[in-house]
Amino acid sequence: DQQVKQNSPSLSVQEGRISILNCDYTNSMFDYFLWYKKYPAEGPTFLISISSIKDKNEDGRFTVFLNKSAKHLSLHIVPSQPGDSAVYFCAARSGGGSQGNLIFGKGTKLSVKP
Amino acid sequence: NAGVMQNPRHLVRRRGQEARLRCSPMKGHSHVYWYRQLPEEGLKFMVYLQKENIIDESGMPKERFSAEFPKEGPSILRIQQVVRGDSAAYFCASSPGQGGLQPQHFGDGTRLSIL
Image 1 (tube, each protein chain N blue to C red):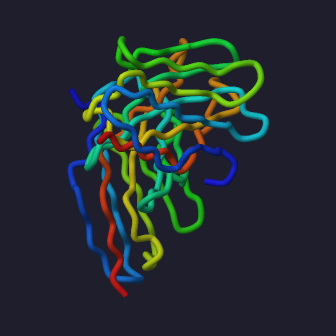
Image 2 (tube, rainbow over the protein chains, first blue to last red):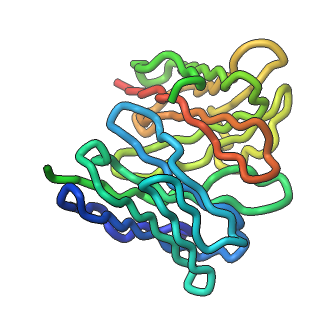
């Protein structure tokens, strides 16, 4: 049972345009959401995060939106650059207790065409 | 991924041998997490440790797998009597603490291949 779902395995975008990566979750106990970027043969690199008490967080070209009622979050990259081509993972963490682990989606491979 | 150091980067073992994967967390981080990634899959949580304590091992197979994070030295993920299905990328992450909104930072992983 996948608690974090990224339904698009891949996305292709033209350089300069907006990239929108989507993520859905099922567990209403998640209180913290993160996006990671991963290049081949490297570990995931933290990009941006959002607390469940917010609906938007922005950092430079990256903005994450959270819609709690729909259990949906999205990552917007604008303008997209060829160097953004990578696999993007959405992750979520349950709040409280001793659960510090992250639950990851399967990832979306973003290709930004020059 | 500067900071979290994993070694070796690649490890080849024959079926039945033991595999030891090491992880040194970022400076100042006392929480370590191990994840496994199979091809075309996301990362799956295995175990969460603090110094000398296993906090959560709910994602780790009950047999053949063990993890430790001693007072001195790196965290070790140990797989005994490896089988072909253990072939995967194993990633370690660290964070300064479990509370609050603190992202986990990942190493570049160990790619384990079982012959």
